Amino acid sequence: MLLVIAMDVRMVVGTNVRRYRGDAGLSQEGLAARMGVDRAYVSGLELGRRNPTILTLWHTALALKVPPSKLLEIDGPLF
Image (tube, rainbow, N blue to C red):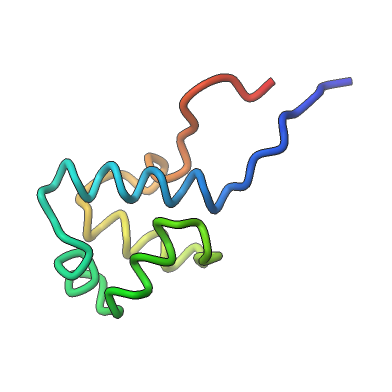
């Protein structure tokens, strides 16, 4: 049996969005404009308060110019 550490995927996505947004030199407003959402949505996403749909993940990745899988990558061990 595998023991999986409890991890909230929303926090994983939020951390990655924040990192890639910073790498791209974008403000929350800049990313929001690229995604067609409010800045508050980006803030909520980065804080792990949003539960993005697969479509939102796709648009976020396009806006950040990264593969969608990068938004789900976890630093550190899963087990």
